[in-house]
Length: 420
Image (cartoon, rainbow, N blue to C red; front, side, top):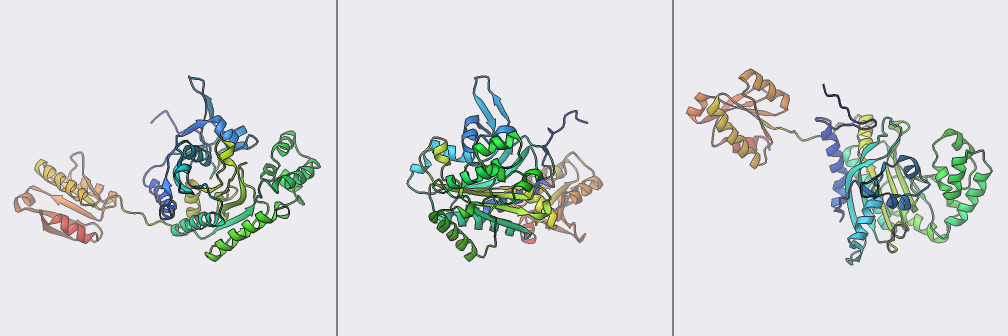
């Protein structure tokens, strides 16, 4: 047995369960690819300063959860804790916003890292699929992303999730609310770290999950009561567009999300079957992030959906995904000549799009047929010396047990027809 184990708070994806994760990623990405979003991939680590500026120096992500390190060359880097800042950095560096076609619509899939207390649904290494629409301020864009995420989840068969929706205002109306909230928070019995956070970004305190803090927040001023007319109108249009698309949501005036860069529209997908880690994804508008990281004004909106938590949500609802068979045909050669002939036939099947595997290792008939049954294949191809002399191969239906001889030159067409 190996003396090494996966690091604490991480996991390995292994067959057959890994097929579910691949299917979830594909289902989330499919609506995006059909809506003008192009794929982007960024490095697994970035400058620490990128996340400090973008995510926010007062956030738990930056102060407690980032895996930060110094390179031999003296650069301060961090494993990426989220995707938006990296994607926007890459888009700005490549001048995608100058190509003349805004918004720049991008989607991505990858691993992210946060030093958190491990528990079910919360890992130190996790997987997300995300989408960003960069460079346009339009309620229809916010609505589009919410609708596409809803479409992705429903295509997987998920039904018991809820969409929470709120507006965080903008640079015009949020300062007034910020002052009112800070005045309220200063009157509470909070620890020094929380009070310090309240002075830097008081909205972060509303996102504090500790019961001792949440109890004191009863009666806290709500941002919706401080929204300017422009933010009210913007938010109402988002609500109307989402509703017209048949997507059900809940207004949640206390929804903040854990990142400093959000403005106006913010939303979260939650699943009540996951216990304390109920958020399966979320996002919102981040109109000032580009300027925070040294770029021009580029109003943008996006989301990230957790692959790990989506799989847990599917399990909580008892949803079984229809996964394609990894192997449709399993070849069983009996003898060296049969091995050579049948291996060539397997290669031909694969070239014609038929998933095929082979009894490697010189197994006998009994062991090879056990391997065929374990593979999940629908059909087995069995070839012996007499079959070679007759120019046929034995085709066995592993479900019904029926077996028949098929001409060697006809087997590919026969299997393509049988497998549809």
